[in-house]
Image (cartoon, rainbow, N blue to C red; front, side, top):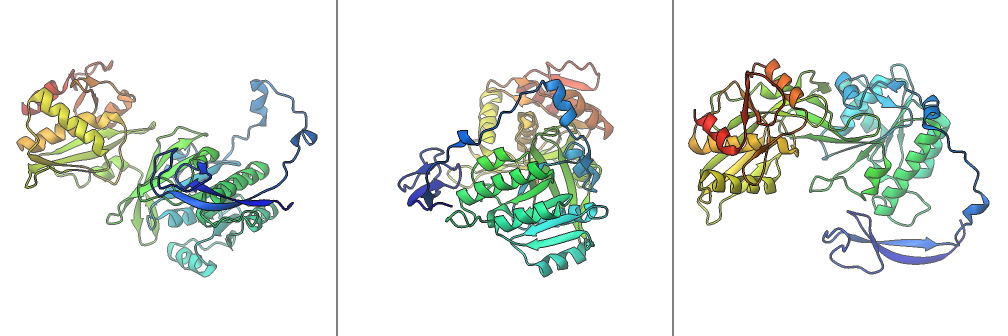
Length: 450
């Protein structure tokens, strides 16, 4: 590497924007105290035109011949389905989640399953080899074909992948890797960008699929620049509450399948066990006949899951009423509360409102609006929602109930679990006597009131 001048720049850990001087706030994304100092060495630019080669574009019909449709099974059926049928050759998959949620345990189980017939490499920058062995022995993941590489040097890792050519590589985690060609510390924006880019290049070059573990920030987003999510083929979020046994792997981006799919697991002594029927799992502890509990058919992919939405409305003892949520956007709760006050004439300014999505799932789709609104009214009036009723629909600012996608799939899933009354938007095209079609929030509340 040619010697050059060393300069200092400041990089935002959230968005990756660079600035010549430090400031408390990033002017690109608006985040506070996210600029970190990095030293870079500038060298003479290379003339890429001298090494350029001529590449002939081909018709899209010929591109099919270059694809390899075979997928590598993870040994976990629900996980394979969430990924679109398994792992594709050369695929780069980013798995993120809170510390201690079970990411390393799940991926070690996947490595063990693949190692039954293929060679697998588990690269760890956070644990020594004997620590991985102890966990592997506990969950029954000690296999001869499972190779361990406790290493953080990016050059050593890429060389090992090219020499071994395993069927699968797991890197735990991307924030611990560093390239000696860069002067910045491991975990910095430039190191994360370099490591993810180099691993992607190796995966595409060798055809070896790579699973990368990524840390998340205290806000719940993936740590590092957004370019990390754009480089990889698939992004999966591992969610759950430490006090409960369930874990949810949600696929939020997938170039080889549908996004929004998810797999549900139960944490046990010998690792994570897949839950074949998530709906029955989430409904197993549902309080029947209690006010403030509503069943919502949730889906962001092809397979809906029935989950419980709970609301608690109580008299406030503070000057400003509390608004707290778990698994639901608190700003959306404020909007729904305002709609209920204006359209139904309900006074909620002296009430604390708490909303919880049971199961550790974070719901972002607008179809949950009607379920949240009905749960709030049910808790306020202490009137239980009928046990055989499921609810979904988006609520507009004027109180109208708008249609959502995957309507037929939601209805089918609800009926399969005995919910013979389903409250849906009035524009739903499905003709079914069990459907309760409502145009606005007033009609929805009138049905609950009987």
